[in-house]
Amino acid sequence: MNKFAEKQALRQHYKKIRRELTAEQVTNHSAAIAERLFASSYWKESRTIMLYLSFQNEVDTKAIYLKGWQEGKIMLLPICAPSGGLMEMSMLTSFDQLIPNRYGIDELPEPLQQIIEPSAIDLCIIPGIAFDHTGTRLGFGAGYYDRYLTRVKPSARRIALAYECQMHTASLPSDIYDLPMQDILTEKQWYRIKAE
Image 1: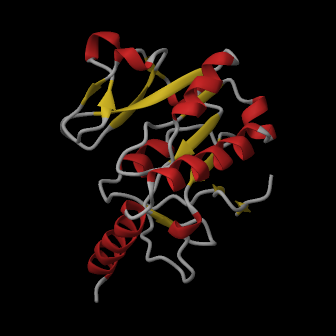
Image 2: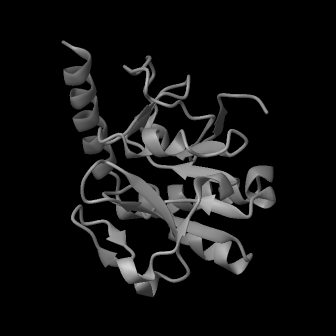
């Protein structure tokens, strides 16, 4: 099996596992992950945070947005360009501003977008379909995050949120453009891939 086909098969496998989580499991696991994140120095010391809105049973991030707003942090939301595979980050100040984009993911309408420079980001919180213990991330395959993260300052920590069932025990297939995570945070533990 070639690498592309292997990645596709793994995506289908882990998406199925994630879809099978109950609403109660998603709620409980997401709360445990958020609490662990809030207790970290990365969260406490960050002012501008790149985040995402949950989609298809991903770790629920609504509580993270709410906590960030409560603490006066600048919370960002991905904006995917209709063509060219580019992603930007816009400030998000309320869930009321959102409308679904072409992928069915809530997004800010263009007139409300306030694009923030990647160099302003202190903490990158990233979704994915599967991860391994070396920080390799298997995303949806469009490369949006891999391309965007190369524009963020090196000191911005890359933390993936995932359920323990998304952790692949062997090495995931990867390409040279796949940017590894520095930490993976699950409901059971914090995988520190890269030291400070």
